[in-house]
Structures are given as structure tokens and as C-alpha cells.
Image 1 (cartoon, rainbow, N blue to C red):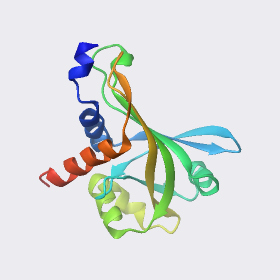
Image 2 (spheres, helix red, strand yellow):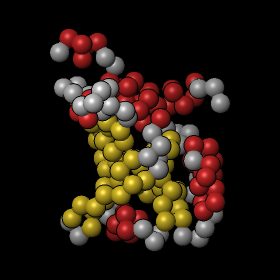
Image 3 (cartoon, rainbow, N blue to C red):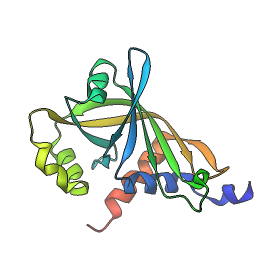
Length: 161
């Protein structure tokens, strides 16, 4: 327990989210869960961005019910998968036409330029209302959204691009 008290879960979670290049998006369809692989990026405002096709099941689900969850994971500390750091954000996702969001997303995922301009692809922003971090085996805590968002914003605006 003492080792966990010395850790900064907010900083760890922000770094994990900033480094995430893939994740699992959980959506709801008629009261049933659905999970899909997505490629998140952080927008200049610190919120998670996704590039989603209108043809995908998860986009159709979000159009009907914007509630969702995003799980991103890091690398396990050893052979035990329970040592993998992971972050779950629950909230709502909505399409955005913000030009800065598009640029931020494509900076992280430049290969997506190929299809980002297709008529059936839209950028979405996930606004969390609940965040839960697991920093490995027996190291877990709910996080304050405002504190996490502040840390993410600080990371984004203090990096050297």
C-alpha cells in the first residue's frame, strides 16, 4: 500500500493515454455491449479523438446512444498480464468538425490521411464523466476527471514537437 501512495496515478494515466495508439471502444446497441478496436489520439484541448466510419457498427451505436467507454492499455511489467497498466474512460462521444482536432489526430496517425477525407469518416471527441486507472496488479483507483484533464493538457502543451 505504501508504494501505491508514492505513485502519481494521474501522471501515469495521462502518460498512458497520451502514448496510446490503439484502444477498445465499448458502445451500446439495444442495451447490449459491443467492443471494437479504435485508434485514439489527444486533441489540442486534451480530449480523446477518434476517426470513425459511418459504416462501422460502433459508429451506428454512437449515433443512437453516445454513451461509451474507451480502454487503453500499456505494456505488462512482466509475464503476468495483471501488471499491464490500463485506463478506462466512460462518457459520451460526439462528432467534431474542429480543424485543430483533425490536425492533432493526423499528427499521431498520419496513415489515416488516406481515408480521413472520405465522405463516410468523421472525427469524434470523447468527453469522459468517469475515469478509472489500474497501474498494474493491486494498484487501482478512480481518478478525478479535472485533474487528469489538467495533466494531459500540461503534457500536450509542454512537449517539444
